Image: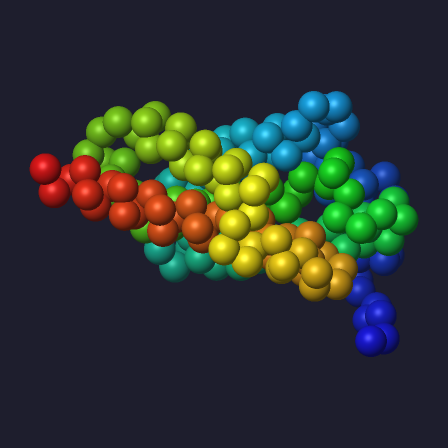
Length: 169
């Protein structure tokens, strides 16, 4: 498969690498993905909670597209496949965990929902069940980001099932 050229190749390496690693967060020795997830939770609470459904999905789509391009370019420049220090993928995938969760947040106990979503996302991201692991085989930035999106989707579905069950009582 021929390597397609991307606009991201024109961005200077320090910008690509610092964006892909979220600055110093990706260089944390132990669990940089967890640091990226914490940043993603903050990103979600600041940017996504106030948005309506259409703006939420549009913002998510734009950031995922940008992450795919930047993570793919970071792979090339670091000469590594899905480098551990690249945590932009966790960051942009985290809002997927909470798609449609807003009504539950308004019922109270938002911090419990955030904590549960965080723990579930880390479990799905680390262990990659249900075929999530195989998604990493896609080339370039798609392979870097898609498994995190799938982990976010698995988290979202699990959260909805749990919260639906809890609100029935």
